[in-house]
Length: 389
Image (cartoon, rainbow, N blue to C red; front, side, top):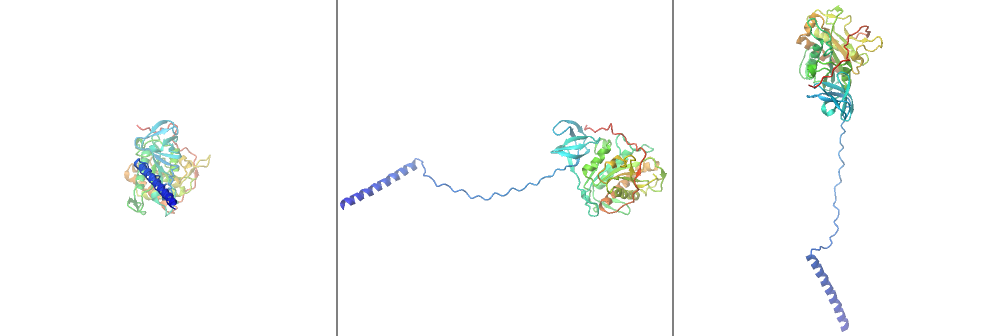
């Protein structure tokens, strides 16, 4: 029995000794900077990653108008090739094609060239709303085309008044009317500052007074019509004055030629003709005219298409307005006055506004007639693109 106790005692002593040794080793390890193994940390709980907000895709305009800013802009032979010419500031160039950040533009001489989008101000093409009472004038796009320019004088009055200058001034007056809110008295024809009609969305001139030589530069017929196509204009109005009347008349001998290929052009012509009579008839003159007045169309006898190149190339409702006869003394004197030019401009303004915002049919158009003569268009073979000084 005593032997068993002694043996058990020895075992207990041995266990106690071993425990002491272990404790001593652990303490030494702690003093030496050795840490006990730590428990594996658990992974943190993360909030679910939100789905990325979709970025709206920006649709770059495929067609439109490139306005040349102050200092001009380089024309290039092609994207990332070489610039060959710096075109004059203040011009507007139509474009019908883009390649990334490059625009293929048409110059005033109807040549094509490339410009970098970052070098110009881009005006996107319009949306072409249906005409009628719901038409939003604030979104309207109008191209005004002052006829002739530079060496193409157009008609010349008895005292030397040049049609090209008169046309440009009238077009600029129409632009100013369209670019501000207006009130219209449809009985008298008066157009005044007001709030009943908003500013038009965009008004583009093919020859602009802010451009080279104050707008007196040549513009090819193809360039003029391409401007309206690229801008997807709601209407193209080419402003002219006439020469060589055939008859005396009791009323202004105004004529408005319409495109036979584009729907609604004859309606636009008939409405503008009515507004011209309202504005111009109160002036005193020995009026002259042609054998036909009002809305007209002329056809090429060989092709049956529109005789006038501008109207033949048109893709939007288009007219050529021949207000009065600059070749006649009384009518030249009227065209020299600001009062008459403003009345002419107000007639165009009201005519375009009525065309867009009503279902009026206007004056009944004359049937298209074959034109057997030469209108005397100046050749574009020596046309010059204005350079930035």
